[in-house]
Length: 361
Image (cartoon, rainbow, N blue to C red; front, side):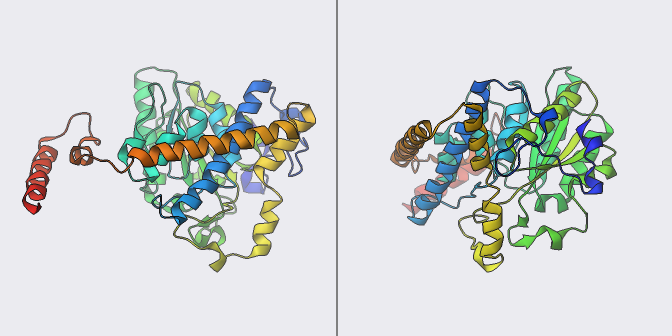
C-alpha cells in the first residue's frame, strides 16, 4: 500500500512526475488509455482558461465573487479520474476542475458564481453535491452519504475535498471520525494550497504534515505531490478501491499551491512574496503534464494552439449565454431549492416575502 511505503509522518511524499514532466517513479506510472490522459489534460486547460476569464469578468463587474483554482488542477483532476460514475463528491467551493471532469457544465459553474442558484442543478447522473461554502461541512455530508451507500449495499464511494484551513474546523474531525469508526466508504482529500486565505499552513498547524492527522482516526494517510496528476490519480484510485472493498476511509493530502488569490476580494501580494510564487510556478501542474504527453507522443504544440483557441471560444460563448439570462430570478427560487418539497415554514416565509414586495411597489 502506497500509504505504508510513503509515510507522511516520516516526511515522505509520493510523486511519479517531477516538475519537468519526467517519470521518476516508473513502478507506479499508471497504464491509462491515451483518451483518458488527454481528457485529463484538456479539462485542466479548460479549467485554467475559465479561471483566468472568470477573474476578468469579475473585475469588469460582470460576475460576483469568484474563488480561483489556478495551480490546483492536478489535485482535482487526478482524483476525479479515479472515480467511477456511481461515486459521489462532496466538494468545497474551489473545485472547478473536478466538477468539469465529472460532467458539471461550465455554464452551470458560471451561473452559480453569477449569483443564480440554478447553477447548482446537476445534469442527470452527475453525482456532485452543490458547492459547499460552509468550511468543513463537506466531511459530515460525505460520511452520511457513504453510510447510506453502505447500508444500501451499493458499490459507491464518496470523496470529500477540503482545504488546509478546513482541517482546523471541528466538522472535518467529526465527519471523518464517524466514517472511520463505521468503515464508511469515504476518501478524504485535503488540498493543501499553503494558505487559509492569508494564513500560511506553518502558522495554522504544528503537524509535520496534514496527512498524518489520519493517525488520530486510525486510517491510512499519505501526502502526495498535488501538482502531479499521475500521482494524485494512483493514490486516489488505491484509496477508492480500498473503500469499495469495505476497508474504510483514507486521508490524502495533496501538497499544492494556489497560484491566484483566495477569492477575487483577496490580494496575495500582501502576505506572500514574488520569489515564492516564482518557485511554485516552476512546478505548474499543467506544464509538467503537457511535457509528459508530448514525450509520450500523445500531444503536440499544433494541437495545443487549436485547443487553446477552442476553449477560449467555448468560454466566451458560455459566459455570453449566462449573461443573457442569469440575472432573471423568480422569487420562488430563493425558497424552493433547499428541499425536494418546500416545508410549511418555507411556504409561509415565501408568502410573507411576496406580500412585502407587492406592498413595496
